[in-house]
Amino acid sequence: MVRASTHLRESVAGTAARRVYVGSMHPAKSSYDVVVVGGGHNALVAAAYLARAGLSVLVLERLGHTGGAAVSVEPFAGQPARLSRYSYLVSLMPEQLMADLGLDVRLASRTTASYTPWTRGGRTGGLLVERPEGKATRSSFRELTGGDEEYAAWQAFYGEVGRLAEVVAPTLLQPLPHERDLRELVDERTWADVVEHPLGRTVTERFTDDTVRGVVATDALIGTFASMDDPSLIQNRCFLYHLIGNGTGEWRVPVGGMGAVTDALARSAVEAGAEVLTGAGVSRITPASDGAEVTWHDGERERSVTGRRVLSGVAPWVLRILLGEGEDTATKPAGSQLKVNFLLDRLPALRSGADPAVAFAGTLHLAEDYSQLETAYAAAAAGRVPDPMPGEVYCHSLTDPSILGDRAGSAHTLTYFGLHTPAGIFDADPAAREVATQRALASLNAVLAEPIEDCVARDADGNPCIEAKIPQDIEKDLAMPGGHIFHGDLEWPWAPQRMLLDTPAQQWGVQTAHDAVLLCGSGARRGGAVSGLGGHNAAQAVLAEL
Image (cartoon, rainbow, N blue to C red; front, side, top):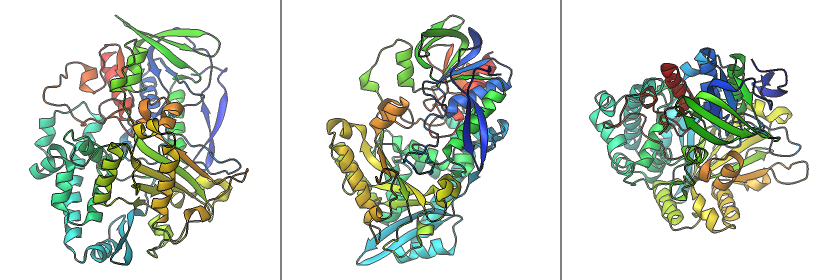
């Protein structure tokens, strides 16, 4: 267990204060079975599984706390609201994984799946998708499109995708299947639509309405800068990951904030016997024939330990630097998102007349018609901030008011996630941050009956409770190269036909060029999002090897 020199940090998970033993200290030993580099959620998952199996585990985290992007903070002075500043919803984390690790975390369903305001021919309305879908959803499609054909196409397409998810989801906690093995279990048309052809072709063939097409397309573009017709199919892979979580694709709100998830993971790892050191920024990993040496600085001096296996929770691009392979800027990932976090005194009214408690309860789509998404991509590819700015808004406090602290009541949090805002735009023009933020506000105000600025709370210094984050902020705060939230482009969650699966690391999709060093973060195959899959699969590979 952790030594007495570890400090005690109080955190909030759900409604009760929990004790999580993590902190800066000297390691208890000079050698471990496993050393985990990075203390994000995947690293904690790996540490928890391995410690529960009886292995000695040391986790080294650069920051003063664990959790990486999946933590809760109070960003506005004098306001008790706890926001998930970067990561915000959970879908891909398997329920089996949560049960294995005994996580005391509740994921709450949102009553609304999505709401998309629209204006046509002087009419205003909103496309409402309920959870579960019912009469209001059908009526909403009919009001937008004038008939029932588009909703029938919607039901057919998502029914097919749901059956694909039911096939793929159970494999995520198993050794990698080969592509052919899954393809044989999936309808031929569905496989072609999602896996073989650019998703833009599928969306435009299956749907006729521009707004409906856009709602479908957005799941392919979260954190991914691509045209819907990109031949690389990166957009298809992003779409698949957004639709397969636990076989349903539902995105849920962690009660108590995203920090409740990572605090529970840290607790699970430490209680199982893992040691967790914060303030330990790793500077070097040196592989050897029988393991690897890991070197870091603790603020006083350089320290080193050895591990029979080293698991990397950092991005593969960063890992190559730690391994002494150099900094190849040509292969550096680049993120493509604008995050704007708000604290509101009240929810604003919408021009459509929809109840804000319904419209904001799920994903509120803004300027995300299919044609708008493609126009925005073209503008961004040419180095311009899109106008209008496509994005979507989430109000977690409608599902989980506990994150508001003593502001619970009329106050609410709001998070805007902007698409097609690649890091290069902000590198080229320092003024682009303010331009993008203002265009995000403009996209939101375009559907409101009152300016969002009139609803924004003020912090203790009288400043508006608005916080904008671009990819460069993510890289600075979390060392994610280029601010890429997935650590790099997502890969298909199966093995291509020619991929070798000879070793446990290969079989679990966590291999590197060094036998003793494995990936355990979002950069592993089947990594990405707050899923824990990279950590689980790296742990299984280690257990198979050791």
